[in-house]
Length: 340
Image (tube, rainbow, N blue to C red; front, side, top):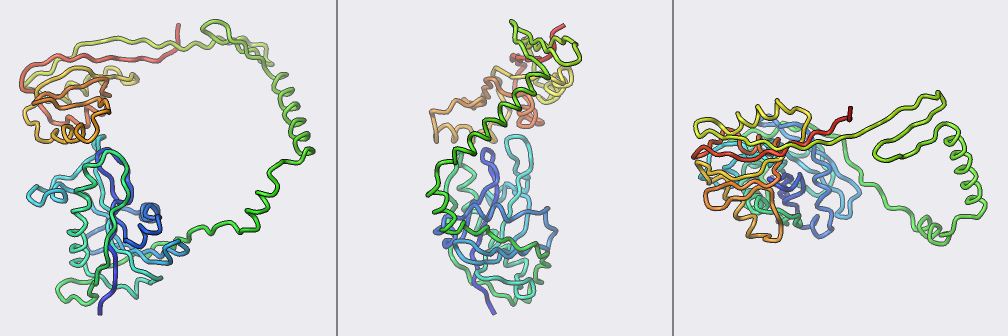
């Protein structure tokens, strides 16, 4: 026996958050591809396990999804690469939520898909994910075509499916309700009068409770207790030179800086040579796609250039990296605190 199914994929890349990357052609035609990102949730699935969920009331009809959640690796972008886990710009691991869509409402007893068949679907989806990996702006989901999946596979046991709560798409308002709202666009005058009275009463109560006066750079608060309180806000900015030693990891220096100023906003500015610029080539590709954007981190030759680059992001991006030569960059430290 075989079933007709359409591959789908929900994931993110370095710049764009989780969204539907690949969706069945009939779902793309109905312009509801992002629905798949809404209805697929859960934790990482163990090998041989997956989820099944029924989706009803959509503009593309009722359908059932079978999916798993795995970690994305470099091999998903290039089959010759290793199994290092892909991460976003904040250093968080990226997940692939992948599976198939089956038209109609099906229970887990009616669907039998082997782990090997889902692996085959995974390989089909890598091309779409590789294309999505280069996107820096949102794009429509890539349409997938129908597949015929055999439910009988002696070489691999069927997935153990966990059935999730069915998802019902909210129905549209009745036409009579819409017409009634359009026929009565003006709020009755009596309602407006009552609303104004309520506002005046509320303002009167608030006025009796306290009076706020803004004088110069501080605020006087006068309340019923008769206590006068001064509230100040001060921001100080300082700059420090940060030295990167070619024999030490960059993040060792940055972590010390973060511990010394735990509550400050720290922005980095400067440039330095990196031992391997391979992983930064994406910045060059990114700039070719859109030259009008001013990025806070860029690769020029074999030098990384930082401009107002957040410290926490640098710690995540530059993990275990070393500079080729001793280098000094600038750190702008912004402290927000009360004046004394």
